[in-house]
Length: 374
Ligand code: PMP
Image (tube, rainbow, N blue to C red; front, side):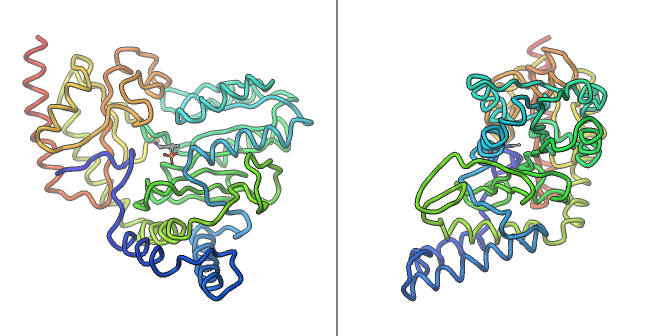
């Protein structure tokens, strides 16, 4: 099997799974219980939180474990709007967000908030002039995805924040860092709020991170016996797995980036040989995500043909597969290009042999399907 769909989800690393199993069987005490089993679990919980805080260089009080990035995005956007509605009712998001953000925005408009969608350049970067124009006295929040899940385009968050501050101080900046964490360095001083997901960094499904700087006010969307954005009993096996997966993914990050860069160059070189293939990989895209448009071939046909070789890739983001790629549309404003996308997402675990086998299979299928379409 050749798995090239790491941006959809990642396999749980064996050592992470070992931790998950060990914590499940040996640390089953509720970390809120007063007896020794509870204390043992609480100590492990504290050490996992400390590890995440050290790895990300953030205060441990800024960390909430959630069920995933979708939940974190909900807390970030809805919770911020509810907590700051006395200051205004306007938010701005980019056209390169994950579909979950657009679902949340649709909901916010039903409860009285206004949403503006800031333009980007053809290189995918937020159009600063458009951002300035869209900020009003009522703007309370800007949400910009750090790395776009479909094309890998990376945003200059620090500059975006400077642009925002020049127009109006006090606007909260949220970033969905799900496709950035564990792939590229992330500086948590560049934003006030962030969302991330464990299953993109080889942790199990069902665990995510919500980061909230102490400077900003966000309402909880859930209430319970504990005062937290995600109340209830801590899912200790998931939290420990997340901290372990994070530590492993951040280890020798630069070296891993170099490996991915090498495979990315090989793939791009191959795709550029074909006249009818458009490469949706602007210069600010991270190497881990490569998006192409086949123009004359349906992506699902291609994906199923590759599957026969046990090779797995995506059309666009897994959460909107089968639909037009909103990100490619936002970049090139070309419907055909946006309807025929394939996303190949690679990891430092990817081997040269896998890239070679993929390229051969891809080229064979492409030539065959192109002939059929002539
Ligand atoms: N944001 C981005 C940028 C993503 O890529 C994804 C996953 N496709 C999500 C949010 C949703 O993450 P989760 O599955 O953890 O809810």
